[in-house]
Length: 464
Image (tube, rainbow, N blue to C red; front, side):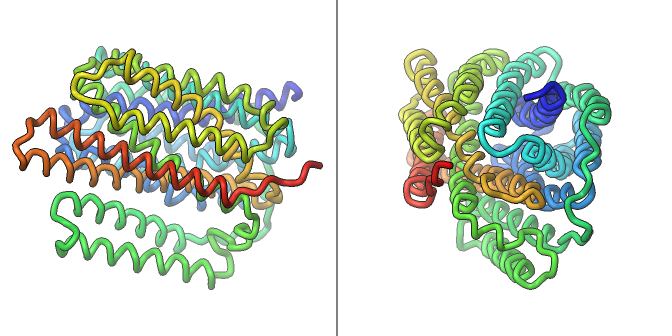
């Protein structure tokens, strides 16, 4: 890897660091945001969900835009929007304002993440060089998570939750300056400039309606008119998206990419892995602060082993990929994740950090460190250069859609179980923990689905 490639990799990783940093900070700051802007317990998930829905819904559009209009240009504009909306979120005066701005911040991120990964895929040739670059990408992403959980605790406790958004501003400005200086102005891969805006609107609206229906179900029940209306709207919009993609001349997702088996398998695995993982961390952040009564700083410190272990394992995964291939590593990593999340389902009111949380954190760190690199390599292998933005957008879309749906599903499960336990005379603390336990069990089931997909769908390529 020459010097110019190292500089480009650093700047692309810094872009991903910015996105991951924001997500990790939010988890630790949730209780403070809830109190500061008077969020209800049921609506708090929308601080995360509004962001990841627009992020996931427009990722394909972001990746395709990068392929058509120049990757550096799209990346810079995406970071600029992210910085602007981060600053405005820090000034939020109401819960509604914060949720709307978070959605706009997710829209900006949808043009950042796939574009940065697309530049990486076109800069580094397939094989060991790309695997090494992807492992460093994963390390920086986990570094962002490590910085996020720690900084989130420090900033929230000593400077208030608003500072968690203001911190994105100087990092983003520096990233723009150095990207303009060091990253080449990539020419567009295609001369055809048509974008499937209608498809992006259909898929994002359909996913938003689905998540909203799940939220309503936890409040009003599945048979309530608002729930059924939202579900019907979701079905109609998603059906319109599929019809649009099959008929439009320039689809958001050209169906030909699904002829590559491992691209399909990698995305089908990433979706439930992130669904279970993000939902688990959402409820763990609430558990350590609301049940174990950790301060924000202590909460941030308690989560640090996970991203640190992910970084160490991710760095060493490329040499294992060369020796064993991505399928065995995928199966092993997902098995670790399944075990770690299942251990969370045994947590109670009096569980200890050293005896209960830390062992599960270590297992999860190893599992995520192995899995994310191997899944990303599998889902981007064999993709032509003019579809690199599409492939990177697709795997990022699977992550964000999985996160949105997983968070919504687990929230329904936890709220339903908690309400039932309260109705049967349980104390608030006992009922809350029971809801968390059932959410963790549901998350475990999602990871089992990912494991079965890895075993039966992923195909090991012939060695060259």
